[in-house]
Structures are given as C-alpha cells and as structure tokens.
Amino acid sequence: MNCNRCVRVIITGIVQGVGYRWRAREAALSLGITGWIKNRPDGSVEAVFQGPPGPLEEMIKWAWSGPPGAAVREVATTSCRYEPEMKGFVITEENQNN
Image (cartoon, rainbow, N blue to C red; front, side):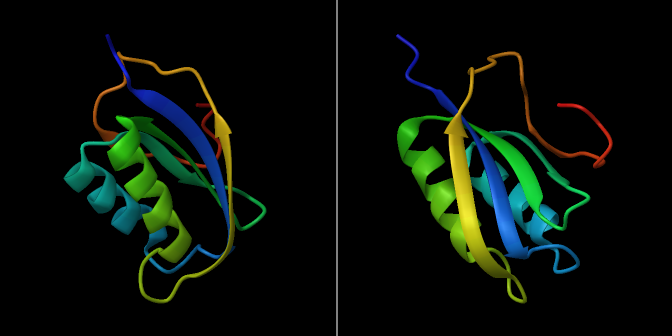
C-alpha cells in the first residue's frame, strides 16, 4: 500500500530574491520529497510536495521558515493528487503550467 501524499503550497511574504526556490529544492531532495517549485507574478512562491507523511510534514515546516533572508507570512496548503511518475524536485519558470 502506497501512503505517499501530495500537497500544493502557496508561500507568501518576502520569498522571492532570497534563494527560496533553490534552498527548498535542497531541503526537498534531502527529505526524499518530489515535486516542483516556481515564483508567481504576485511575488509569492508556489510548489507541489509529494512524499510520505513524515517527510512531507517536515518539508511544510521548512516552508514556514525558508532560507535566511526570507520572511514567510503564510503557507497555504491544499491536497492534490499524488503522481507517482513525478521524479526529482525541479525549479520551474512562473509561466509554466504544472
């Protein structure tokens, strides 16, 4: 039985121009989380995190703190459909539809 979950997050605050996406990728890879992350035109960051419940919760916790220089105001989460074919963790461009 696969217990992996998927969550889409929108992170607001001072989260662009501070290395947020790169550090999130490092954190995700170290936790075994798959997914993607991108800047949004409104200054927020959007991501999809997939993985087992424990590491997924750790990744969401990391999203609240972010890297040095970030000032996270909110991390809004919604469940999404787990996609087992998604491999790795990628930084995408804001105009890509994921």
